[in-house]
Length: 393
Image 1: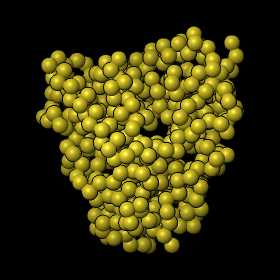
Image 2: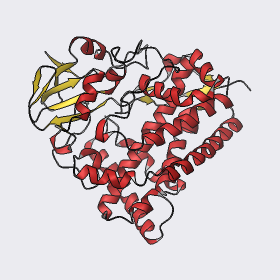
Image 3: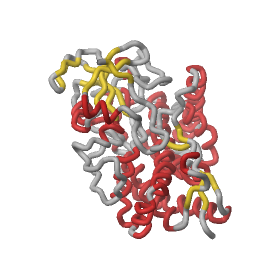
Image 4: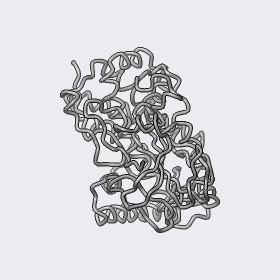
């Protein structure tokens, strides 16, 4: 049988993976998959097989080899531009990764943690002064990651409008190739100007630090592009969707509010339970035997993050949100050498923002029926378009 990637989430269960993934995982965790461009490759849905594929160097992340299974997502048959290290293999990927890892220093992360606490408190103050109802995406979930990534890269926060909207366009499944290309060009132009300023007058930020390496301007611009794209939309949607999930599970809301010390564990469970990234794609560089089946060289393999993170073979009662669960081993940030470089920063943001929100607004509630919350099904990254909330004064 040849499957089509399930993408439709159940309307009455907005936190669950697309319907059909659980059945595929139970019956055929490695199955043939039809891709929109006509390619026939594979889909992996079990936790063990997802980790196996992502850890195996015989499966390539190179952009020019892969076929994309997501309807509306643009594929490519060209190598990744210099600096787009997420779509490269070793040794190119290794070189970039090593340079970037050196910039995510303990000192910088500690300083950013303190800044995240200050940034979050400022937005919660403004939210309290405004009074409810408010759109949590607008007042907290989007501005906090935007301000944090600006601090990290040394971008003036006042300039965020020049890249934020364009960066979001890149994830839209309904964006035309022309619109996507225009958004990419606009973000690159912004980053070129920023890079010139950093070379002329470096400051204590990641982009300035990278200008002291042997990276070219093109590489630096594209690295900045990757970091912007990874640091904005994903964390914003985890904050909003995580809040929605907590409001929909009052016992879990109460548990985190009563014991903020479980924040780190709670964040891991929310990352597992929500799995806002649909998956990623690898392409076989040679014939590979996997679960008794031959994956031929050149065939793309889609690994499903939501299916893997709800696998009952790895997580007991996986469809239940349990903030006290030891959820280590989830693949929300991927696995292997391409595991998300900024995962610790994302964790810190979530560990700061969610307990602070619940502590400041213990009576927080949705300002509309849960079934009326507009879910983001038109972008690669799942979440909400808006999250209207209110509270008792």
